[in-house]
Amino acid sequence: MSQENKRTYTIRLPETVAARVEKQAASSGISPTTLIQSLVVDTYMHPAETAVGGSAALSKACERLEGNAVERHTRLLFEVVKTRSAFLHALDQSLSEQAVDEIIEASEKTARDYIDRMEATEVPGNERIR
Image (cartoon, rainbow, N blue to C red; front, side, top):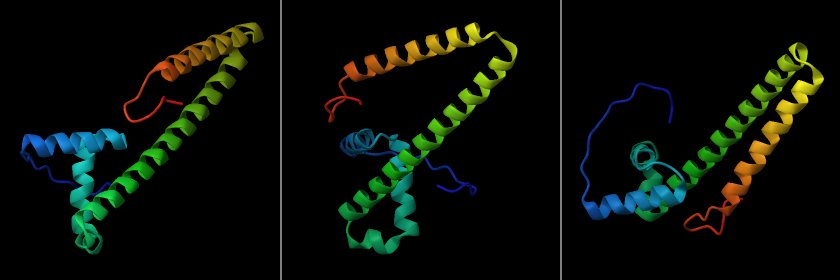
């Protein structure tokens, strides 16, 4: 959603509806609040799509949210790599080559250990995290 001013509303949902919202949000990898916000925004900003059918509108909203999640992930990954590069360059200027190499090796080992743990983690609805 855009950075325009926003208003806060508190709503109450029946348990059965809340459970469905939470299930849909979890399967899309987003928070229930983000799902509800997107559905409301889509209803009022894209009324033609919403009028076609609730299920189609929900599917389109989820597709947009998944696209946004991928875009956010890509941006975050870029920022991490850029920051790592700048950090290593700064270290390279102030520490010995051996010290920098040891830091890089330790970082790579930590990353490999993390990936191994993630690959071993089962995710509902997916075979494994890759």
